[in-house]
Image (cartoon, rainbow, N blue to C red):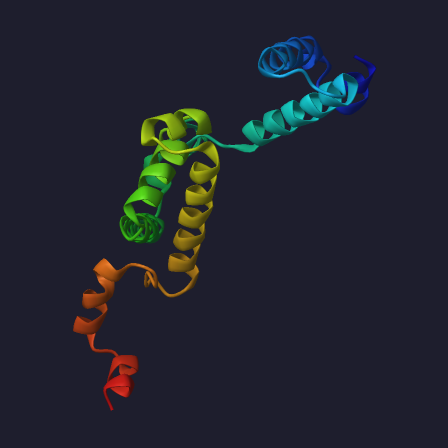
Length: 175
C-alpha cells in the first residue's frame, strides 16, 4: 500500500489499483505459484500503473472530433483548413489502405475500434505479441507513408501503380 501511495499520483484510485493488483496476482497464482511473491506483487503493481498511464494518454477520436466540445463553430473553420483536413484524411486513408491486410486489421481493431490487445488477438486468431508487432509495423508504415513522400515502399500490390506514373526515377532505371 505504501508503494502505491508513493508511486501513484491519483490518491482516489489507490483502492482500485490495490484491488486490481490482488486480482491479477490471484489469477496468476492460479496458473503457477511465483517463486518470489513479494517482487512479483511489486512488478504487477508497476505494470498496472504503466498500463493505466498508457490508457490515460490515449485520446479518443470521438473526444477530438466533437467540435462543439472544443467551442469551435463550423462557420469559423476557414476553407483552407477544411481543404487541408480533407487532404490529410485522404492521405491517411491511402496510407491505411496501403498496409498489408494483417497490419490493417490489427491497426483498425486496436486504434479505431479501441479494442483491448487481448481481444484483437482473439478476433484475429493470433498471439498478443504478434498483434503488438503488427501494430508497430502498421504505425511505422503509416508514418513512413506520411513522411516518406506518400509512397508505400512495402506493398507489392501498389508497385504497378508506381510504374504508371512514370517519374524521373523510373526513367533512370529504364536507361
